[in-house]
Length: 356
Ligand code: G6P
Image (tube, rainbow, N blue to C red; front, top):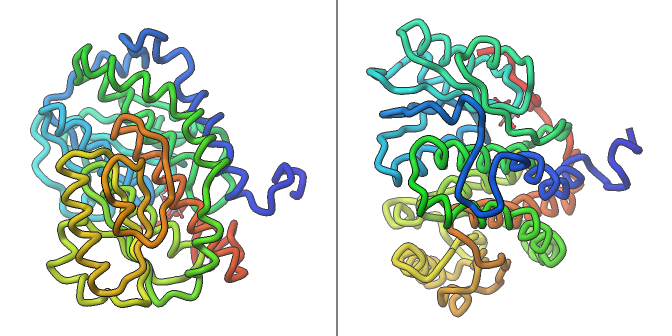
């Protein structure tokens, strides 16, 4: 087992570090050098007029991100928790139903896909696992090509899901101008992630706050699913209390929980309106004495109001989600490591949950 970890203390850390390679595999022969075309075989021929994403856990966060991509392209899209979808299915109409599942075996997701199929929907599986039940039962499959993931907490497969969803949106819903701005950013991702891995100060921040009462994560648009994922990762492997919020929602309740014992990780990308509003939310928590960690590309003035900064390279906001996420994966890993948790096999959790 030790050799399988290639010198890393845990599979999770190995898999976090494998993300540049996993993304190269995901993109290989699918995007061209000029950034003008995307080739994802017959999946690229789909032209959905609406989409319903179904997924669980980390894959649900990828679903939220995927729905945002299509919505921004003007196509109605929504993400559903598979367990809810299976028992309370929405009207499907002509929507394409997309199951996102790393394993392709999650019972709740299979059940939601079966319910969609039963009601006549066309279905697509976005998965890491060739030959899995999801690929056999769905009409189409899009592979994320992340390679095997052993750690129970999903890391590189989440990155693969976000990248594959970008390819899917670019191929089926977006114009050449968008392709030319997004594809180069996707192609830069392996290098950009490597630079985050090489320069991250997440370990020091994790050490300082490992004993905090609660951890909060806030973000908007593409950074909102990352905020949820950052909190889930931390909960799963450190057993510490953590919550992710849409940054604008903080003042509608969660702000009551904020004290000097609750570090807030704020995800701030670019210098536009979204960043400006999130910086406003940073000021709200700073005024309540919360330690603030800005995870940012440095384009806004977020750093002025933060106690710590986790830097990411500047890139397209869609690609930036994968970079802020790497910083949060490292925070979760190092908090859990400081607390001596069994990182690869957290209590009560399974890699693939085959019961509903
Ligand atoms: C389990 C795992 C999670 C994972 C979820 C969905 O709960 O512990 O890490 O996100 O299943 O898995 P899937 O294989 O469907 O992506």
